[in-house]
Amino acid sequence: MPDTFSRPPRLILASSSRYRRELLERLRVPFDVVVPAVDETPQAGETPEATALRLSEAKARAVAARLAEGEHALVIGSDQVATYDGLQIGKPGSHDKALAQLQAMRGREVLFHSALCLFDSRNGRAQTLDVITTVRFRNLSDAALDAYLRAETPYDVAGSAKSEGLGIALLDAIESDDPTALVGLPLIALSRMLLAAGFPLLGAQ
Image 1 (tube, rainbow, N blue to C red):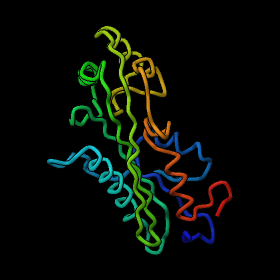
Image 2: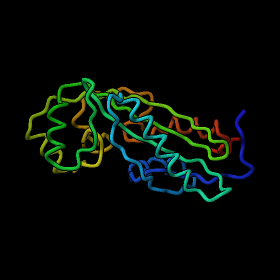
Image 3: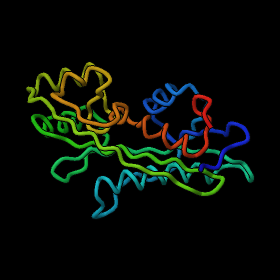
């Protein structure tokens, strides 16, 4: 049985991403946002799954470490890494890098690792999970890719394609157990973790 809270705990999203914040708002629970100070550079020889899991937990723990003495909270950390042929794809940060990413991925299958961590400061337990989404990109021309980037400017998302927006036009197929995972925060998995931690989601204990 989960350790239940006597009253709803403080819920914290350890992220600077507005996309994750917008996703978490769907659960209609109060939460705070605290930006974690974590170096997101992949480690040498690290697999994409390991990178995503390590960073999601590191973000949650970094924010939990800043809680006041005696304060208890559930802290949500998440990280996404895209990969094909064993290569990791991060956030492009510029138009030219985004175009290069989309050119490399067109006509191919790309795996998106959306890792999630729920850290419980009461007991130091960390629930973690990597939710994998397989995305097949259409084989589009350079002109079409350039037009997409200028319309949506998705330079702050891994893989440069926002499936919740115009980026859906770049894709042939999406395969996942959780449709929110590709956007950046797997809400199905998070709901399961919150309930396991005793959080009163939908009034359940």
